[in-house]
Image 1: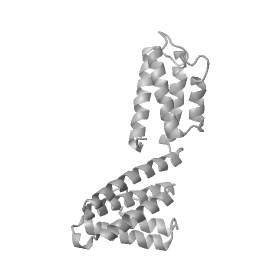
Image 2: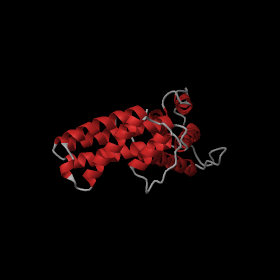
Image 3: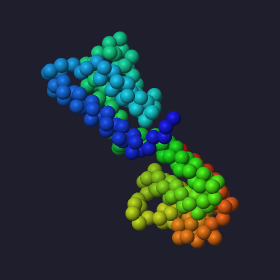
Image 4: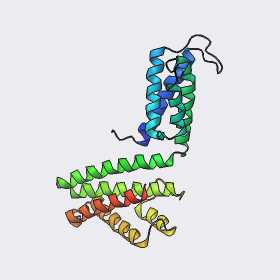
Length: 224
């Protein structure tokens, strides 16, 4: 299944909602009735299936959002385009809950998938002899993981100036992980800095391999 990023999810929500609102406007929906005509049946069926699929992937089939839209699409009159207004409302609710963080566990699953994808790219760089590039990418993944941990635990940080060590200190201070993990993160940050500053002689293949494995385990454990 194709990896969905936060931005891809937001873009899909926005595109479907914009289209849904345009159809309702074109049909003269005034909040109580269609004043001009019902939505086109083909447009309604296509749009509602896409909306249900997005809600399924983002919110899950046990969510009230999916159950609500599925109850409409399972009705005997499910092909009646009159129901477009209801489906648009359900999609709006799902989008608002996602944007407001009420579906945080889904966000972390999405981010975990994305992290795995970047680490796979780092492994490919390493396999082709680009040790420094792999260390830089793994370091970026580690920094992003620490930022997500701060978000998850409501720990404030400067999104522009904050680096791995600053995040590491803040997270360790409130015991999000133990001192051993804090020490490992410091070591990984040092290896990344060596790579970023062109000190390639200090970036050993085995150290980078160990870094990739460790970052993968750390992210899997803490972004679940």
